[in-house]
Length: 82
Image 1: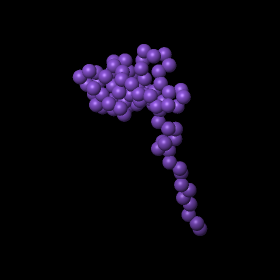
Image 2: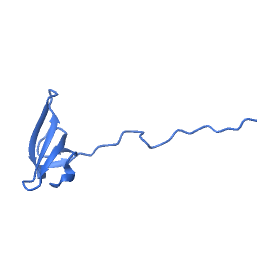
Image 3: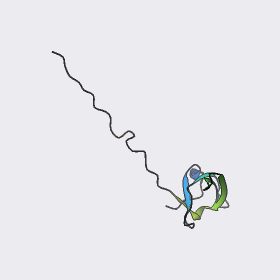
Image 4: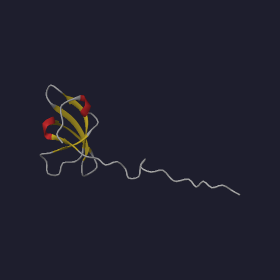
């Protein structure tokens, strides 16, 4: 899903669609006039990297919510003593 150069993009997780093994990156800032986004990510050696990408080269990643969070509540046993 492509993105637009707005401040709402800050904090989103994106990938560079043109890179075959693009890491997931977090958007730190957006320059709406230049249509550039500053991103940060972890490299293979666990170092923190950052860079600027054209916004039209980025796609949002689809994240799944953690399994079981808020989906069901435990049933309570209610019985009367006689």
